[in-house]
Figure 1 (cartoon, rainbow, N blue to C red):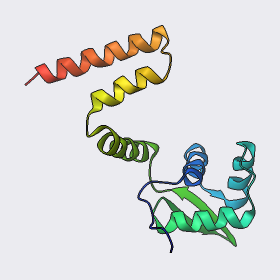
Figure 2: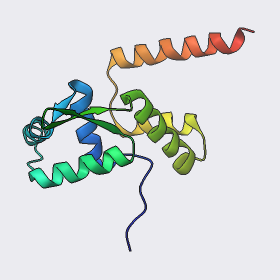
Figure 3: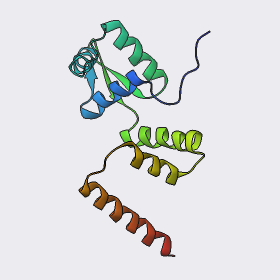
Length: 132
């Protein structure tokens, strides 16, 4: 039984999107080379098959340049990250953004400049809530 198409990119689809967010449009050959440099040396047919799935999912668009297919993202990094993070917040943390942030603090060490930046963001958010 085939699994249903996810509304979120798979790991490989996300790697391909990262390549295309950096530079696009690109032919399959260039996407495959970028993936190999990132440690994912895949068969040409695997990359083509994945790109075709991504076209069906509307993650990328395909255009023709002579005989070559060029691929470009149809979704932005911000759209994908927002949707994926929103799903995690809802499904794992029952909609609590605070629980996500607290969990992130537990997962890694924050540098002093990152803590300073977070304090500034919290101050801005607090001021926005106080404003009518």
